[in-house]
View 1: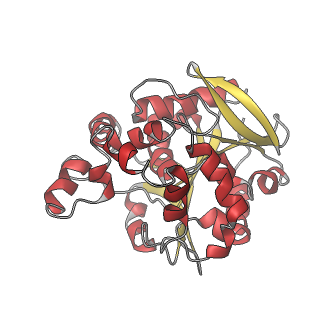
View 2: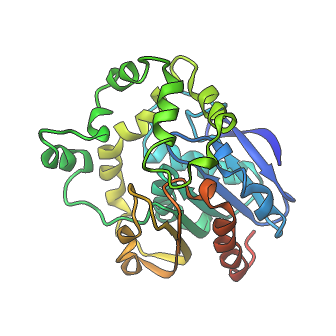
Length: 294
């Protein structure tokens, strides 16, 4: 696994990379609050099967640039589309976990010409809500606003998450709780990698901006949200994920022409880290079933 920077859409992205650049491209997009390191068990393993694998720190995260821009779906997926070209490819299979999973299903609709396949990890292709999602959550959670609502006011979440030991407490709170089925996969040395990524002043703001643009993304996606995804897709769910349970994937077949579903047992929200062997075992036959892409 190599480290490199790639210029895409006017910014620099830090990436983990493995495999021959002439082989078909597989992009791995992480979620919140992660970095490319979340895919450490997949990069070399997938490359060994004959693929060019790239896992970026997403825009605004980790060692990637943190521009003062609107972190909406046009900028984020536009940057991923630019990354495909910057890496010398015409298409990719794009995989995403958590927030990365939100993006990949829409990437296939925004950029069908760039998409050879889609892998959703925990995050399914969700039905479009009747009203903007944050507005809907505000109507549902009137007295006990959930974190997505609390993230909306600029500066408030950053201030709250700076209490105590700041990023250190925040990372331990996120990973050492009920979202994780297998706590042993997050020993101190692993948590330290994430803490280092989020300790710098301002490091949390761009990732939280993803949430602050959810309603904007709902508006922007109206132009393509009804498109059926025609390429073969893989949905990997985790049996014990309390955030994104397998039941959320019900009905995806109505919007995706060719869909394979896998549920990984004894696994919480952090699937590719909690059950890396099972995750890889689901990904490899799916990739092998696809015609080679440029």
